[in-house]
Image 1 (cartoon, rainbow, N blue to C red):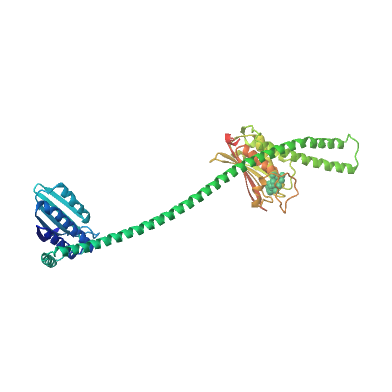
Image 2 (image 1 turned 135 degrees about the horizontal axis):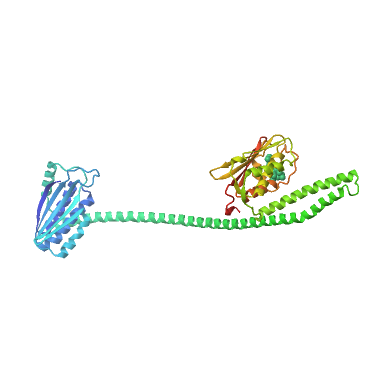
Length: 462
Ligand code: ADP
């Protein structure tokens, strides 16, 4: 930091105060301060002089130019600064020190050094960054400003008035700008408020909609549950009511056709044969319905025991022999590869029998294969019933598990059925803690996969 003394003045009268004010403004002008900053700097000095002079009777005023040699990147601090030091030799009252304090707002730094012998007030204003003036410039500024004398008090008053007017204009411009910004701000605020209100209303409406939807969903779920229960009850009741008369018909037909009974004409026998087969399929349907209704009502409790698949396979191959079949063969493989599992052997046999019977029904010529394996990860037994039959189109593959759904297949063999076998098998698999999935390709065959937990159904499954 280098400093250069610009001007030293002794101030002994009010006229001198006018002069240093004038000189302060000129120095500020020469050193590049803007019009309003010149006025601020000069006004601050003049206010200090005006207040101190009556207290001490004489002041000295020193103008100093300081230059910070270290260059800074932001271009504001560290440049050149203009300071003025006003020294008053003699005691100054607190009131006066307080009063001159207002000038701090007009400059960048304001320092008061107060001692018993007097007061030194230093004001500093940083200058626009243009590099320090040359020694020759400083000399010319100094000469010019030293030669200046204040005009008459009237001139000073006129000058003051001009400065005041310009300051008033500046204040006015600032106020106008402030008003404009305020107006803009309140406009924006209104917009934001309107948007907020609109959004809140929309949100509220959406919320209401969601709440209503949920209420409706709950209601529908409840209705669906009640309807399902009613359907199960209805099926169970109707099947139950039907079974007795159908069984009676089957019994009566058997009695009439008994060789010990009166002989029948051929036509009568044919008609009775027809009644017998119809009654038998009706009985099959009624029994299937009853089974399904019982499984769905949750009243079917599995009787769990450790089961070796070999036993199930043995039972199956026994019963399969009685199933009428086309030219397909049944192959049961892999039962030895799986550990015993905790399950209900009767229900499991029913599931597998349904699937294998279906395989045989829908495989006019080919093979139906039941294979067993063990999936260590989830600790499950995997039973796959695959056939090389007519297959099931993709869009039907979930529907075949619905009650009474039968695929309309152009090559469907003339087979009997109720459309209740798969829903019943899936329901049983669920009761055993597992599930049935299906993969199929029309014309190539189907694979039904039953997965069952080795440890048996957990509490939540039952
Ligand atoms: P059902 O066999 O008594 O008609 P299911 O519920 O057992 O009733 O089967 C429903 C329908 O699914 C069958 O009618 C048939 O269209 C189809 N389906 C079942 N198993 C097979 C299979 N292995 N191959 C082809 N289609 C099948």
